[in-house]
Structure formats: C-alpha cells, structure tokens
Amino acid sequence: MSHGPATPLTATASGPLTGEAHVPGDKSISHRSLILGAMAVGETRVTGLLEGQDVLDTGRAMQAFGARVTKDGDTWVVNGVGVGGLMEPDDVIDCGNSGTGVRLLMGAAATHGFSVTYTGDASLRKRPMARVTDPLALFGAVAHGRSGGRLPMTVVGAPEPVPVRYATPVASAQVKSAVLLAGLNAPGETVVVEREATRDHSERMLRGFGAQIETRETREGREITLVGRPELRPQTIVVPRDPSSAAFPVCAALIVPGSDVLVPNIGLNPTRAGLFETLRDMGADLTYENPRQEGGEPVADLRARFSPDMKGIEVPPDRAASMIDEYPVLSVVAANAEGTTVMRGVAELRVKECDRIDAMATGLRACGVTVRDGADWWEVDGRGPGGVTGGATVAVHLDHRIAMSFLCAGMAAQVGITVDDAGPILTSFPIFRSLMEELGADFTS
Ligand code: S3P
Image 1 (spheres, helix red, strand yellow):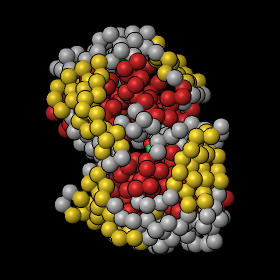
Image 2 (cartoon, helix red, strand yellow):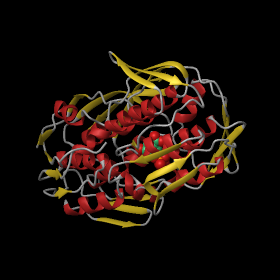
Image 3 (cartoon, rainbow, N blue to C red):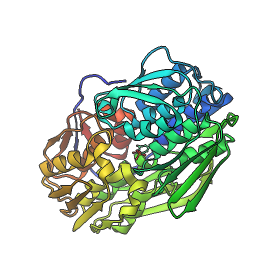
C-alpha cells in the first residue's frame, strides 16, 4: 500500500547513544513464514513477525490467495491451503513498496492455473520484474506487464507446470526463491543454480516445512534441488531479529562519540552478516556476545562502541550479496572513517527501492563528502570522526534504507541532516524513531 503525505525528519548530533536496541523481526524471514504458512496444510504460528508495511502487504495478499491470516496475542496464525491450493484473488494484488513480496508471490502463484495482476507503489512500479518472469515462463507461466517488464503486470499461471532447471543470471535471493516457490507445485525436481551464494532463508524454511530440498556446491556454483508437490507441514516459527535493521543502531553507535549499544538476538546467518565483518575489517569496536543457534539460524548479541580509529577499506566484491541492503549505511560509516572505502560489484544497488548508489552519493555530496561512482561501483572519501558537514535536506526516493542511513549520518554530523520523507521507514523498521530516541538520538519533525 502507498503511504500518505511526505513527513520530513531531521537528526542532529546528540550525546552518546547508550542502552539496548531491540530491533524488529527479520523482514526476509517474515515474508517467507507467511507465504510458506499459506502453502502448508493447517495452522502455522509465527512469533516475532516484522509488522512492517511490506510484510503486512504480503499477509493481506496471502488472504487474497485463500489462506487465513489472523493474530492471536503476539502470535500470527496462518491457516494454509496446501501446495497447489492457492485460489485466484478477486482483485489486484498490491505489494506496496516490496520487491520481495511481489517477486515471491509471483513465483508461488505462477504454477497455479489462474491469472493474477500485481502492482505496487511508485518505487516498485519502476523495478525490473523480467528477472522473475523469465524463469517463470519456463514453468509455462505467461507475463504481460508494462514496457521493460514493469508493474502493473498480469501473470497467467501454468495450468500444467513442468519442472525447471535455472541458473540465475543475477545474484538474487528473490529470483532464486521465486523459482523454488513455483517449483513447489510442479511435478518432479526443480533446480536453481546460483553462481554467488545469496541469502538462504527460503531453503532453510522449506526444509523446516518438510520439503525435500538439497543444496550442493558444484563447479557452476550452488545447486539447489527441490522435489515438487510435497505436503508442507505447518510450523511454529520464531523469527530472529533483523540484521539489516540492527545495522542502523550498530552503525550509529560506531560514529557517535561515547556510544555503547547492545543489540540483542540478531540473526547472523552467514548469507546476511557481511556488513558486520566489513565493519570489523575497518577497525570497528563491534563484538558478538553469547553466540548461539535459534530455530536453525545462528544468533548473537551485538555490542557496538564508538570507534574513532576506523579506516576505509576495499570491500571484497564477493561479500556483496551478504550485505546488499547495508551498503547505504556502510557509506555513512565510511564517511566518518579515515581514508577511502571502495565498493565494487554492486550494480544491484541501482535497482533496489531506488538507485541506492545515486541516492547516497547525491545526499552525501550535499553533506560535504566526496563520492565517486560508476555503473557497478562507488567510493567514499572518509572525513574522519565527526567530519561530515551535514546541513542538507536529502531525497529518500521512497526508500526506507536511504532515510535511515541519512538519519544516522545526521546523528554524527556537524549540522543536522533532514530527510524529505521518513514515511518509508514504516516498511521495515516501524519503531526506528522511538528506538533510536531511547538510545539518545535527537530527532525533530
Ligand atoms: C531479499 C533479497 C534481497 C534484498 C531484499 C530482501 C529477500 O534482494 O535486497 O531486501 O528477502 O529475498 P535480491 O535477492 O534481489 O538481491
């Protein structure tokens, strides 16, 4: 769903950030728990679900596909219809701002013999969908969208789907997941091969729901084989807290003098934890306390302290997929470090909720930071601790992570930074403002 009028917000330098930051549930895992819950037979119970707009839109969509999604206290309850049991929605499916939502739903529905029309907000309607509809065509689904493969788009599902072998041309967990979800209702084995490992929450959760799914490393990359038409068994799911949301209090603590913040219970799946390794490589005082396993995912408490000695580095390009959503906030840390941070192999950043390289480069330049960029790379010249001038109003282009990144930048800048619209933050981190204020951040509307 689209949000209302723009709500500007300014962050200014405050005292140290201190205390505990309990960030919301993981967005990727939340979407998947609703979708797979709807494709199981019986009642799936989910706690810790991210109640952000993106996930709520997916929940509404699953109802439109025939599942029942309700809330019982703090628990979300999904009564699923079983693999092959999704029903034709009687209206357009509006996925709001969420690329994950629309791409995974397109996959799940594509091997059912009915048509679905999808749309989204102005950001989502600009994003490429052919990366998903191309492999779905191999199952027998046919997509009719706007030029360039954009939403609104109708996908005519395959009445008699065939299984597929597909090597993903882009490193994308959304594409991989769309193919696997489509493969659920195809007979036989569906195989996805990815050259670079992307987040593997779909594989882990499919296994948890009882699907036969195997991953093996081959010369071509990671090969994932799913046996179609399983009976998925309902699950009790505890969603770990989102490392991509944890990134904001962690990075803010690293750049605001005197800070010491504990961010408990963060999912540290290696396909997601690239930012934290990168920060440590830069010299950040960031530790993992109490490491443990929860619900099949590695988890730890993160402690971040003000780190005045961070140095710019060249981020290994093969780490990109494991931190793809974290480059915007990394660039803010880079601006507060000494030396240049180089980020290569990141063309995907240009097709996220907005062109994230362009949005960050433009905003950082307006705040006194030198940034160079090309098609699939960018570099930020650090100005050292407290060296960002700030004082600008930056455009967030309907992108939650751009908004939160610049608000973190404002907390350490010489003059406050204003984002033109904080509304998009509701998509992934609805409690961002109150959580950061409790740590000591200073915001004005
Ligand atoms: C996601 C995958 C990533 C990421 C997005 C969530 C997912 O996109 O940017 O925020 O849940 O699968 P790509 O897989 O397209 O890189």
